[in-house]
Length: 194
Image 1 (cartoon, helix red, strand yellow):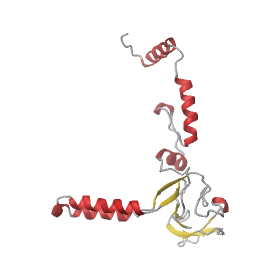
Image 2: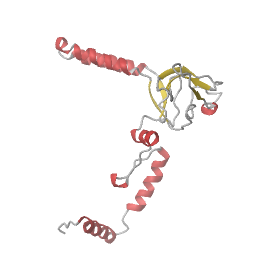
Image 3: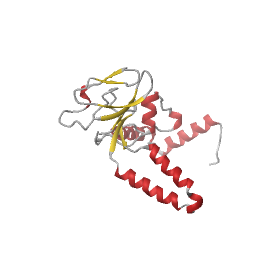
Image 4: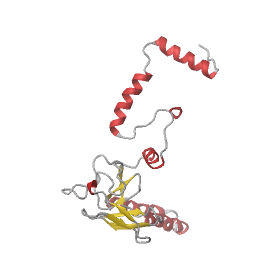
């Protein structure tokens, strides 16, 4: 399996090949080794990754294996040709970019270590990129209750959280709703006409 990762010692991004019997991935710059966990994929389905073999994270997402530099180059060429093509070059090269994007296969990426597994096929639980999940897993950010209800990080968490929120926030009667409104007015110091 082809992968792209970054060395933890020198910071160099590099490409490597991971075989089912591999025990380590070696950086070509500083020769630092990263251990490979063998249980990341099954022997009967080597192209399906259950967790990241390099960092052990079970949180993976899928994305198109698209060369971002090529996409940016197409946009720059289209923008440079705008004075002579009256904007048609942007539309044409956007369509070429979309055509290339649709033809490319999916790849699996680890939220924690950003390793891209090019030959891996995503499983049903590996959805699109989620910025909140990325920030929580990679940077340890938290969700504050003052920011509103926290969106679920995992699909199965969403149903349980919705039930819990409904039980906590649903008024049992009109008088409890009035009491809640009165207490929030007292806290904020505002009064509204009835």
